[in-house]
Amino acid sequence: MQLPEDQLRAGHIPADLYRQIPPGADLRKVVIVQEAPRSYKGPIVLTLVIATSAVVVLLVIAFVVQVIAGAAIAVLSATCGLSYTLNRSSKRRELPRTPRKRPAHPRPVRSKSRRFK
Image (tube, rainbow, N blue to C red; front, top):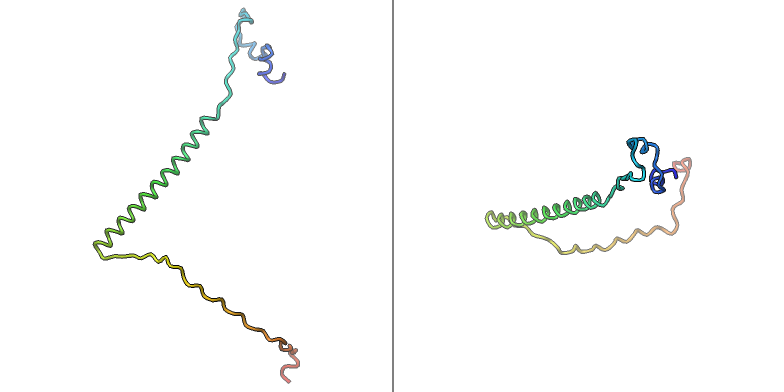
């Protein structure tokens, strides 16, 4: 019994709590109230709600920007004659170049002393 919780479960009153009991009190009628352990459910749920709402806000902003850009392009193309095209055709693939053929017998390498004689 090293922890105060173990002492309280066994019915023993730790010395620091014993000093706080007023003199003359009946120890059989003393009730010791312990603080409940901290619950992490609230902060975890709050964090998940904040993260989810941030993602939803970003998606809504992206959608609104897309709608505004589409409307602006439509208005500009109708009034100013501005147009744009989307090229979705794939580019033709070029044939790969054939590598150079190397000679079967490479030239012999001459030393510097024999080159200019």
